[in-house]
Image 1 (cartoon, rainbow over the protein chains, first blue to last red):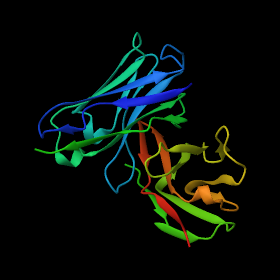
Image 2 (image 1 turned 30 degrees about the vertical axis):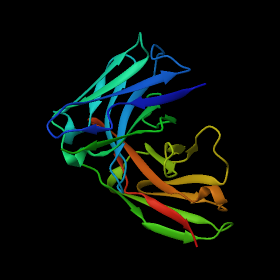
Image 3 (image 1 turned 180 degrees about the horizontal axis):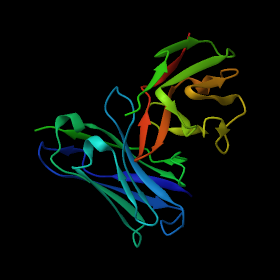
Image 4 (image 1 turned 45 degrees about the vertical axis):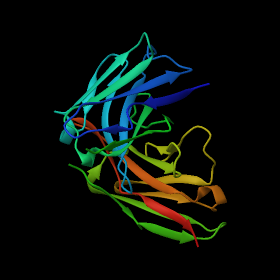
Length: 119
Length: 109
């Protein structure tokens, strides 16, 4: 079955580094044309795109957060990892990973993982 | 930076009615516009890409149109499962990036 599953800590303290993992099932990141992205949604707010990594390792980041974000992939584990440094309470959100095939339209999403930043 | 403004913020309609959702860009854009449906607690669902192409498995009652700065998602006859929040999303190419609109909530009247 084709699916995505996000995982990571539910609670992190301000200034810490957040690491989130997205595990792909039913398809492989070795597939040409596959792109994976991270998108978040703060409580009561709209969706916000964060980063994308392509099958050929090209990477893209939202301008406002690019100094704090790193996206990477582990094809042997079929995973995509997002790290966010120096987190702040405004980073409290549900974080989603999503798939696209190069056209930036995400046809598969995970259920999301909620992250709270609080001391 | 391009800003996407969705209107109305909330649309109150009855099942069977037609829903018309607007997404306006702050400057003229390509047709790399997508629409998503988002139910609370669920994964968002791709409805439309490239402004007017329906995604796989999406019912024909969903249609997208528009170009330039004004785009529209139309749901011809609302089904009970269509009451949700809808987001438009624009891809920019230089540099490659993505912007979401603020969303329109379609609620039962």
